[in-house]
Image 1 (spheres, rainbow, N blue to C red):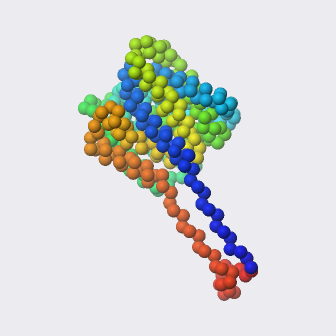
Image 2 (cartoon, rainbow, N blue to C red):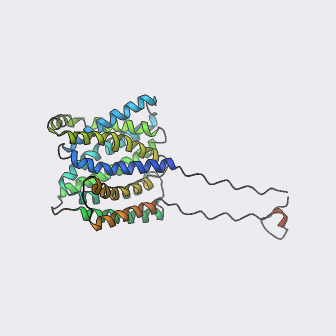
Image 3 (tube, one colour):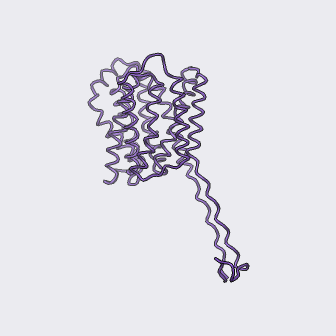
Length: 321
């Protein structure tokens, strides 16, 4: 008699990856609050370089303590591309763009980044475009647009500022997609550390501006710049890489749509800026879209195989023991 095979248990979800993604989103949201302080005293290039220097120092120290060493040669193309585009170009042009347009316009333009990640991931990495992901991103993008409109000031947005924010979104999306293959060959700490170092080297031309700005900047602005390097850069980019290695680029990109909702909440708690009702509604839309994009369709249970005792010659698919 043939024994009925016992179905294997479903694989447990990696909650560490979920916690890592949540840590990244929380810290990136806090970065907007710190940039508002540091950006008043530091020019865009100087702020990016100071942030990257602090992040590189922290990551390099941790890498030496853990003795992880250099990543394999196969990881370097992704490290270099992500370092130049995401750690370097993105941070500079985003800081510059936010000086040209109001925060709401910047938020709306930069938030096309997750959509570009999904499209580039499907094109360059062979990732699919599930309906739930697309639906969730559409809901979240609508929420981000509502938040952006509620945060927009009365000043007009310059064409240069919009173009800079658009360039930041393209650099961010391309850097993420380029980083994904590198994580197959190196650890999250290795990929993040050397990507941050590449971005730091690319921003070295702003050294003079950093020294000049630091001489006249208040202590609070400098501390905020250091915070940006240690937490939203060193820690958050590492937890991002850890989670990205365990899911698709499109799903990770959709997760960042929770950032506008958290920014609204943090501005309320830390800056005493009471959010307008549209901002609250937009934030809730962002979170709802993230929830939709992160869900997986349920698998239909496999039909039970008939017991050997109930098999007969007239029933197909039965085997006698």
